[in-house]
Image 1 (cartoon, rainbow over the protein chains, first blue to last red):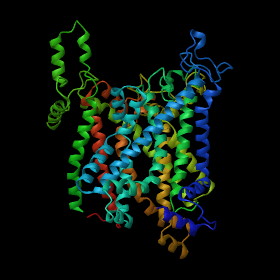
Image 2 (cartoon, each protein chain N blue to C red; image 1 turned 120 degrees about the vertical axis):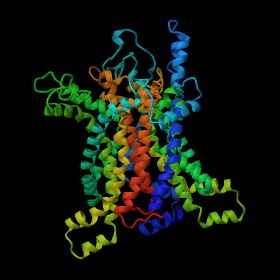
Image 3 (tube, rainbow over the protein chains, first blue to last red; image 1 turned 60 degrees about the horizontal axis):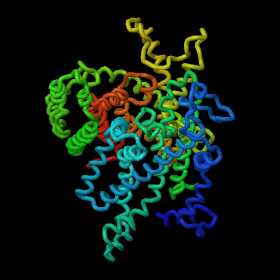
Image 4 (cartoon, each protein chain N blue to C red; image 1 turned 45 degrees about the vertical axis):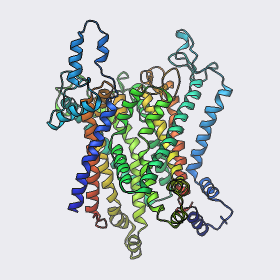
Length: 300
Length: 329
């Protein structure tokens, strides 16, 4: 795949691309993709906000101000984003909620991609009954409406961060499995796989050392877009009240009781929602750019 | 072709069985609602045990599955736990039309807007229009539905008022104004339409992006073909190259899009229905499953899954029928 991309690159562009490695070339193409760069800047902004923010604004996200005066404060010097219905500092909750939301997004997207890759590799490489069995199961999982079962499972498993990740992963690996299987079916016919067979490489070695690296580019794209999807899932589960439990903040559970605030305190809805929206948009822009950047057929 | 269809239909049976077992298995994790009654000293233990037995909660989940499944085969879907006194089938039948109306209108609105947008942005690839469409599509795809719903509700039901200055411009939720149930058809029609504006807008905004990008890539694929170049070369006006030669073939993948959207029209949108207080399928299924009302939840889920499986086949068959290049063997 890398070689092909390099060749396409050589033919397509005057600028010598022989100095570039594959990663360097993808990076070079990515920097010329406008929307990807917009997405990258949005993500850098969000990451700075979430990780550097608390170093600058050292408020405790779970500390409640007692009494009626503490609740629903409008933004002021003491509380730049105001306080919420328990009198907690909204800005601090935005920082720590963002960390949780991003953590759930990253871990569940990466894990479901890896599980999908494992299923796809085994099904595609071995074929036969292993393929039949795994792919029928994948098909069945794809025909089940995800969201209701996600909620059912989340309501049973409990409301910790790891439980939410588990739930998202259980319903998130199928598309990657199909993707990898498709790639493996064509990759395993190539000469280098035959050569690996010839020198007596084990099935495990061929799958992980020869086939998997060649699916990596596609998997990175799907993980990038998957992070955005997982963040939305977390937010939706938390919005319905089955997500990360108080007092811990996540952008999703900050919106949990938000519907009753639309009359008096719309800020409490606007901030976390905007953060989710920007983050997901950033991942989508960046992931789409990445997809274009690794596609050798596309001129950038 | 006939053999292909027969093979696919037979293949559906194990698929549907797996779907049933997996969903039932997950539902059975929800604890029995009767166990909590044990705490209450005023209820006789024997009564609780009788209830547990009637619902099958005294059995391990796979035996309960067989109990439920043998009822289903005989056409008995069981009573609903969420709405005591109703049959699960009737509970679903009440929610279904509400959801089909909402999602059907949403689907039509989205298609009517998304298809032309997708075609224009493909024909004018890399133009300003194309960029604007791409960015708006991404905005829609990245928008959490509950957030957009709440923002719209804030704008149209809280901030903006009708000329009288008191009533909000659009109702914040529900499906019909109370007391209007017996009004004339057109009054009811107008009333229901008001309640649909916000949810339809929210759902369409989110799905239009995906549809438009799908149409765009299908159109781009066709425009690159040789026969389009031939048409241009022999002097066919650009208008009819696009409208006649390209569009007809670019519409073929839309068959798949429409077929695969059908299950969603029945399944509803749980979050949007929750926000706008619409008694539809999405909300019902979630309410049923967290109350361990497995008969109701299973009908809902099965309905959606079976439609997904059936319409996948329908999509493939219709695709082969409109596109003679595709042959199944």
